[in-house]
Amino acid sequence: MNPLIFTTILMTVLLGTMIVMMSSHWLMIWIGFEMNLLAIIPILMKKYNPRTMEASTKYFLTQATASMLLMMAIIINLMHSGQWTITKVFNPTASIIMTSALAMKLGLTPFHFWVPEVTQGISLTSGLILLTWQKLAPMSILYQISPSINLNILLTMAVLSILVGGWGGLNQTQLRKIMAYSSIAHMGWMTAVLVYSPTLTMLNMLIYIMMTLTMFMLFIQSSSTTTLSLSHTWNKTPLTTTLILITLLSMGGLPPLSGFMPKWMIIQELTKNSSIILPTLMAIMALLNLYFYMRLTYSTSLTMFPSTNNMKMKWQFETKQITLLPPLIVMSSLLLPLTPMLSILD
Amino acid sequence: MMTYIVFILSVIFVVSFVGFSSKPSPIYGGLVLIVSGGVGCGIIMNFGGSFLGLMVFLIYLGGMLVVFGYTTAMATEQYPEVWVSNTTVMGVFLLGLLMEVMLVLYVLKSEEVGVVFKFSGVGDWAIYDTGDSGVFSEGIMGVAALYSYGAWVVIVTGWSLFVGVLVILEVTRGD
Image (cartoon, rainbow over all chains, first blue to last red; front, side):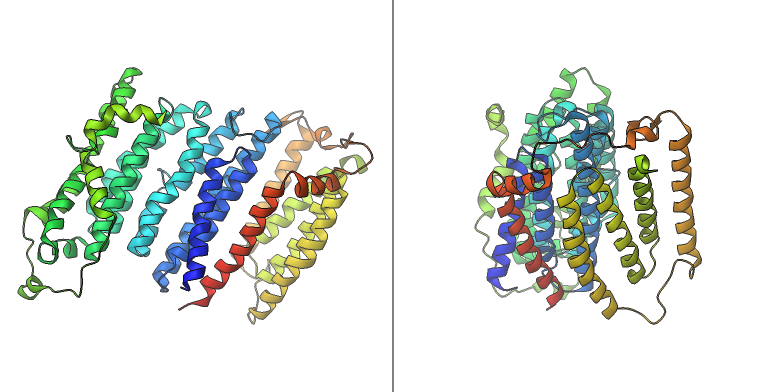
């Protein structure tokens, strides 16, 4: 793509999300969502083949439907409250429709079906943008309407998302689909605590984005999109096997790594609000996630995966230099002692 | 009949939406879009938005739909699908019509209708007061507000349209 056009379109994606996050008028928020959607389509279609076209079409259709639902909820809210500001959604119908629309945008169950298919059809960098940056805008709107969200609907969607994200990722060997199901599960964790303490949602979002960025960059460095090619990392760059191990265990939520911090805080907040069964179920279902992360670490770092002899002597032209990778790895594994600092997110 | 003109126009609106949602060939979809655009313009005009209705006719029907008609005429096939040619299309169309007829009967017969919104029978659709704001019509005041207080909206929408064209060119360009 022409670099100037690519820069313009990328800046428009950023501008769309910024408009969503900084507006107080519902119409501007909707315009921001549409601008974001429109501008990310050519980024998803950077490589021009039928798979990316199909993935972009699926993404566009689901997100456009979600925008239409959001617009209907905005108009119902306008009808019943007579004003366009975003502070509180007065009508329960509007609140439910809005929650469903934002859940479609995030990829929560039962609207999760597009996430693995779209993530699989696009390149690794586009998948990175899709799974991290695109989650910011809907989550910021959920944060802002969190006092008026129907708890039953949101908790149902959250718990089902954690279940689907864990269960669905079990049979996957393609790394992008694994990351997609991981994203569904993490979105479930984030929205489960939204009504109780939105600060923890933001904390989880922050840690999740750091960990997902790290994982994707590790994949980009070894240009691996399947478990098989990831298992050859010991041959290309042996150091990254350890880094993949640490980051994957952090994503699974194991202490003492920083992925444990959001899960710990969320479970603590939920039990403080006298719901015991729910965080127990959530923690148990997070084990499904941990299983397929462990499977990746088993084949990548812990064992030398069986391969033919000529695959054991790989050479590549020059290693990609990803400047942001070391700080990201450090941040996605060593942040746990900084837990008391999460009060700055208030 | 004139008291219920908005209700009648809304029914025709929904029927034409059913007409193109049952997916005939795009040319016939464009035909019912013209009808629905004209009827929608009538609904807006009944609420006092004469400027906005004129915008619908000029920009939507006279600009965008004309271009749509040209492009579908270029991409048309030898035997385009009408509503009665394919059993599926006719079935969906008749089903939509049936649901609309049942909804109209529900509105006409019962005292209060509460599907998503609650409104009490057909009387709620009749216009009594158009929200007079003095000498000027609301549509023109809206345009004036758009270009004064709403300058940011103009910038954002202008940029969105510009990027829309860029995106379309980029997507259809191929490799």
